[in-house]
Length: 159
Picture 1 (cartoon, rainbow, N blue to C red):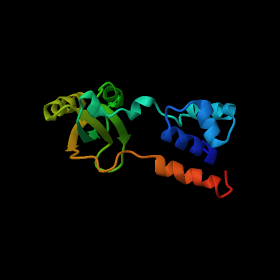
Picture 2: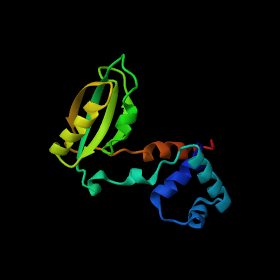
Picture 3: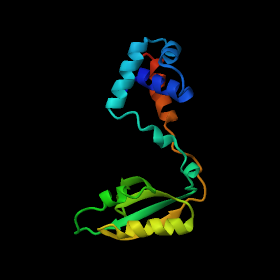
Picture 4: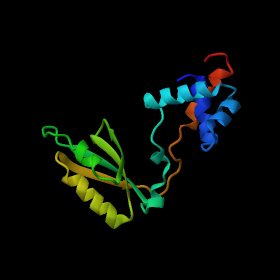
């Protein structure tokens, strides 16, 4: 990603409903250049699905929790596919340390979280879980500051 790509992403972040012509004009580039760069970023996986912008609370899932999962070191298959089948598992990371996986889950309430935890524990290879309920989101996922740092290269002559 270069600074022009970053400037395109910032412009989309500022005006997600803007037309390609309006964005290209704002950025001082040809509409075909904008389209080609967006297609490349999409093809390379830079752009993630639009559904990532949806607040789970709007879908009735106001509770957020983080579940550390310890896996059996000898069992196969790994439970990742089973966990992918649980809609309330919205993010999953392999980790170092005491747990093997860290998953972010959403639920309607604590009873629903108990149900989700039960599904996680039922996945083959899961030995135990440790759940921490989020009291409030202090800072949502943010990418803008990182993108701005790349975009600033434009003004410094590096692109």
